[in-house]
Each structure stands twice: as structure tokens, then as C-alpha cells.
Amino acid sequence: GMGGAAADELAGAAGAEPGDDPGYADALDAAAADAASDESAENIAKLTSYSWNIFRYIGDWLHLFGIVALIATIVKNKSCQGISRSTQILYFCVFTTRYLDLVDHSQTAYLVFFKLTYILTSMIVLGLFYRFGATYERRHDTCNLAVIIVPCITASVLLTSEYSMLEVLWTFSEFVEGFAMVPQYIFCYREHGNKVGPSLYVIALGGYRVFYALNWIYKKIQMPHYSDMQSWIGGIIEIAFFVDFLNFRFTGNSMLRSMVLTVDTKINEISDKVEMKVLGSSSTLRAEAASGEIRRRRKAEDADAAMDHV
Image (cartoon, rainbow, N blue to C red; front, side, top):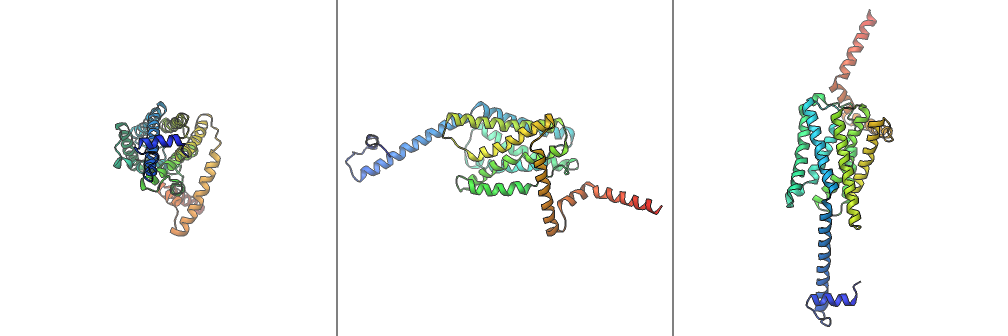
């Protein structure tokens, strides 16, 4: 679809005369390929320059602030109360699968700092959960991780832009991040707690996603052909949950709460039935046993039996 004048100009640039054949066609192809690669290089340079915008910086620092607030809260209280371990496991998956490009790309110090910090802090948080395991409120952390991870694996294989290991894992991390805060929201919905540390963490992480969405909108305005569908899908899901959580946290109303808890309860009932059939036990029973509720019930039953004898 190239005009004759443009073709001749390209051919001249390639050092061929319009009448030369078949070398003329080859030179023309080579010159057209060069022009296309120049244009794509220019587009990449433009996208890179627009990627470093104020929204992105605010988002990154909010994210870091949220993680620091989370670690400080756990260490100060020597307790994991109010915090979903499932959300922390998902974030660990997100960072370790997304930042594998640290191994094979040379990157700016800014990116290396944030990527290494995210991986390291996600390990520290899981270590703190192990250290203060007795304070972990398992009964509120009911979200089934398989229900998030399995569809995300499927979607990343179907919707990746190219079939390289790094690209599939990057796509997986984008989808998982869209749902990473869902276990924390379920935890908060069930707990009804207004603890400052966990709330600060949730609000900082939600704010980080809002600023990243503004960063995408800014890039889209500056470069209309910019597209990053995997990130956008994850971002929209996450922001919808975040806005609903803010509404729940500050007004006590929530559009998603009853739906999310109903779905969550149903999924747990189904997985319990499957586990009972396959393993002869279920995670709910194991959790109850661990928290001593069954022992307390037995004591109560024994007391009732003793009263009956009297």
C-alpha cells in the first residue's frame, strides 16, 4: 500500500535505481523493513517516555508505603490479626512470576530497586506469618486460592501475546494481581474490623492501582494505539473491589459484600465435599481442630452429659 513516489524515495535511500530488477524489489523490501523498524523503535521510545509519568511514580510509592505499613503493623503488634495470608501468598506469586525479567534484561536502578523490594518484602511478610502463626485468624481468611489461580493460569495461556515462558508468566501475574486483594476484602467483610494498620494497607494498595489506572489513561491519551489489555482487565476488577471496600469501610454499605461472601461460602462448601470424598477430611474441619473449637465443643458436651447424670 505504498505510493510510487514514496517507493522511489525508499529505493533511492537503499541505493537502488527504480529500473533495477530483481534487486530493486529486494532493496525496496529492505528499505521498507528499515522504515518500519525505525517507526516501531520511535513508538517504543515514545511509550517509554510516557510511561514515566507522575501517576506511575505516585502509584509505586503508595504501593511501597502500603507494604512498609503492613510489615510495621505486624512487627509492632507481634500479630497478623486483620491480615489475609492468602492475599500475601498471591502477591508473592505475582512478584516472583512478573519480575523474572530481572535475570535477562538490563534495567534502570529505579526498576531494579522496586522489583527486588517487592520480591523481598513479600517473602518477609510470609516469614512473619510463619513466625506469628498463632495470631493468624484463619476463620476469616476463607477465600479458596485454587479458584483464583487455576482460571488465571488458563487465561494467561489463552491470552498471552507470545508463547515464551517469560511472557506467559507475566500475563499470569497481571491476572493474579487483579484478584490478589480479594481474599483481604473477604477477610475484612467477614471480620467487620476497623483496625488502623490493615485498613491503611488496603487503602494504600487500592490507591496504588487507581494511580496505575490513571497512568494507563494518560498513556492512552498520549498514544492512541497503546494497548495493554491484560493489565487493564486486572486493574478494572481490582478498582471495582477497592471502591466497594471504601464504601463498606466508611459507610457500612457494600454492593459486592453479600455476593462475594455467598460465592465464597458456596465454593468452600463444594471444596469441603470434594476433600471429604477424596481425603476423608476437609480443610474446614482441620482449621477448626487447629483453633481448638472442637475441643471446646467436646468440653461443653461433657459438661452437659455430667449435668444429665446429676
